[in-house]
Image (cartoon, rainbow, N blue to C red):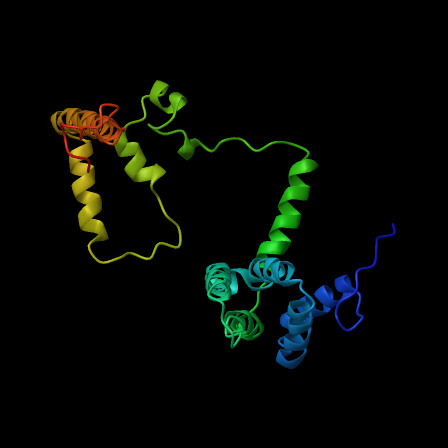
Length: 227
């Protein structure tokens, strides 16, 4: 398959530069990663570079540093804001450089990418489909209700966690919720109060919409003040 060759500023093939950029980040080669990153930037392929860095943040760093996508997204937003400010010193390049340095020096894991390929391929060619496990058929499902599953079943089976890191006061909250949700009177009161709050919020929104409509008589609108 042939493709139209796109050249960068120094005459490199664009797709080879992008490939080299990602490979050097994977290997933690800061100098080389910076070289190819600057080549992309100065050649006008900035959106492409940011898009590739977001892919790298998930594909090559992934669970080793789960906040990497958020970091790249934030730096991209800072870059855009600084560039709009007519920065004559070109300091908007700082977030771009930091993004590359962050990716180069981050711990790496391709767990997410391998899992993506394995599971999406497996789903296509599975010899048999999985059955919904019994513990998933709880009070929140139609079948669970038909089976008579109760809120107690949810606490013993449905909310069960593996790799559970118990937090301070977590058990207190759980026990209080368990007590309330097993109390029929409390549940009825809670349902009624939730309905009342929904009606109040809907009425307030309606009043706000009415109050902010222009008055064709040239007079100020009267009634409930907008929130």
